[in-house]
Length: 569
Image (cartoon, rainbow, N blue to C red; front, side):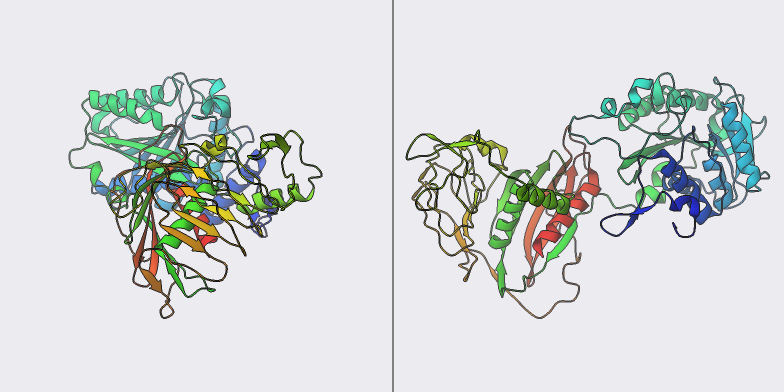
């Protein structure tokens, strides 16, 4: 697209991954992207002033396609379709798309005279005057006063101003959580296009009130909703008005979610039976066959489960262990922020930091068990190791990695790592109020102090030549000890040996519903809440992930699955 369209080429650049991209915070780049997409995909030449709203084309097209499904629900499949575009804007994008792709006749209203001028020019530039009528109306008009007398319409659509005050345009005001990232796109549009008294709720309520008077003059009423919090008061307003035949549909484009609220007074049109809504699959689990490592000849469920526990720890996820058995392992994970994206960028930054770090701050000190005195981090002892002082705590053990000079760690840091809580661990599995994580040794030698705790350690990994462990005073023995240097001592559980080469290894194969299938619910301050299942399938081990809630939705679940894929190869 950058090669064919010069007006877009100057904003496109090649990223580190080799893909072409643009700066989505640059309003000029957004302007070039939208006008180029309209020309490339729909042969529409549109002029949008720089101080007016720049439409995102995919979301506008989705609205048109939904209207088409709503009309089919009412038995209208072909013929003359008459629609109303409330507040068409300078781009007149909804009416242009409807006329160009569906040959619908559109009445487009607008209150701003400058936008009316540009809308008329855009219609004439594309020779669609026979299908689109632009009408200038006052600020008090929504529908009444704009419609032609003794004329009926099939639908109305609206993209109202989302905000009630200019202060809401500040990204920090819109964020529901301080951990929520700012918007990725630049803000476009004039003040009157994005701000209205009372916000979108007040505007759409006016549309609802007028629909009660117009009734079947318009077959289907609809409006775009920008904030999910607006849906409840709007649906309550419809119910109080006696409207029960309504529906809502969510659109997700990239990192942006929008909703369409539609209602009708036509008894022959049941909006709840729209194919777009009834046929869509809700919250289907994501499944993935974990491939066999090429350097070993067997792998088991305990080994894979241990790898996932390590990844949970690295991602700083909160975890509930729902089930640990030979037949399957179930976890419920909660993420407050995205820690799985841009891993290569983070590794490069960490490597750069390590290469340019001259001195270790003297303020970083640890308390050693033998001397009970503070020593700077990384101080060497005669045996090239630093002993850990005993940890007397009911908190879970940390996933402590020792590389180079071993470092002892205070138990007060334990709460910053992964959180495990008991949740119905079945008989024959680990049964404790707290579970410790893997302790990894990647040094030539490491001597641990005693761990006086009532918490069991599910596995201890040794990934180097030798490791000398201290005593583990625990009421429950470790269920498995894993050695991954030269030999593998497999714990309890079925040993799934490598069979014949499989076709489509590492691809989605089936749905294994171990979690209750229900609509994911938003969780305050939570980015992602998901269920994770591991279970044998023939000669393989299958991973299943199901969305349970969170503001990140299915997209964050896909990103997390991709992280697991990259780290399981």
